[in-house]
Length: 279
Length: 160
Image (cartoon, rainbow over all chains, first blue to last red; front, side):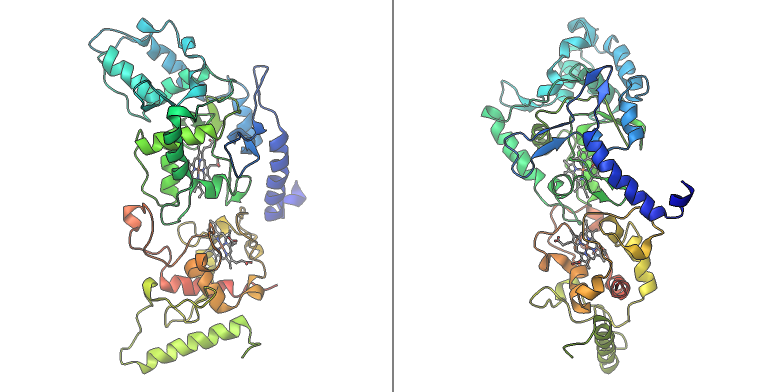
C-alpha cells in the first residue's frame, strides 16, 4: 500500500483496469437469488453483442450495498411506500389497498413496462399510478420524480425483481419504439452527443471519474449515493441531457416515454433489479 | 519550411498575426468569430484566432478544468499524473504534438469533426448549428478564442 500510494495515477488506473474484468465476471446475488447482469444482446440491437446491467460497472462497495436488502438504502423508501399503500387519501376515501390486495399483485408489471394500452397510447407506471389517484381515489397527482412517486415505483418494481425484462417492441409498440430509437441516436446539446456516444460506443471506459455503463434502466428507480434518494428513469434521462448542455425533454413527455421504451428494450433479457444502488 | 516543427510554426503564425494587427489601423484585432474561421482541406486552421500569443500555463489549467476544456475527461495525459482520473474515451495525448502540427491541433480544438468524422469529441469553438442546446449556452462557444490559443500553446508542448 505504501509503495503504490507514491504513484497515485498508476495506482488508480490499475485499480480501475483490474475492476473492469472482475466486474464483468462478478455475480449479483440477493437473498440467494442469482441475477442476470450479463446476457446476449436482444436481436434488435445492431451495434452491441452483449448487454450488461449498470451494477456490473460499479465499485465493489456500491455493488455490495445492493446485495443485501438490509444494507440497501432504497428499502427505507420502499417501506414508506408500503405505508402509503394503506393510506386513505382523496375524495373517494380510498387507499391503494382498497382496490389492490397488496403490492404483490403487481408482480411482473415492471418487467413489461412501458406498454401500449387499448387506446393505443404508450403508458408508463407513473401514469398508471396517477390515473388511480385522480380517477379512482379523487386524490392529487404525484409529481413524476417526487418522493412519493419514486418510493411507490420502488415498491411496485420490487415485485418483479429477478424477472427478465421483456418489453414488447412490435405491433402497436413499433412506432413508439422507432421514435425512441431515433432519440437515442440523436446528437443534442453543446457537447453534441447522443445517448449512444457514451452508453453504446464507450461503455466500460472511464470518462474522468465516471465508469460508463450501458445506461440500462432495469434497476430503476435507483438509489444514488450522490443524492441519497430514489431516482426515476426520466429523472436520469434529464440529468444526462443537462450534462451535455442540452435542453431536456419534460419528465412524462411523449419523447421520454418513447425513449424509455427503447432503452428498456435494450435490456430485454437482463433481470429487473429494482431497487438498485448506484453512485 | 516543409521540415519545420509544429512549435516553430506556431510561433511564426502567431508572430504573423501579431504583425498583421500592428499594421492594421485599429490597435487590437478582434478575435476571429467562430463563423469566420478558415479551415484547410483536412480541417486544420493555420491562422491564430487572436493576436495574443497563447499562454501554455493557462492552457494546462483549461485542460483539466471540468467547466472549460475538460480534456482530461476523455484523454490520458501523463504530464498531469497528479490528477487521479484520466478518461479513456479518446487516445492518450502523450506525444500528440509529434503526431500533429500546430495548425492541425488548432483545427482539432476548434472543431474536430472536420478531421474526425462523427467523433464524440466536442467542438470547442463553434457557436451555432446545435440541436436542443440549453438556453444559457445558446450562441456561445465552450472556449473563447484566447482559451483555444492558450490550450494550443499547452498541447503543443506534449512531445515524447
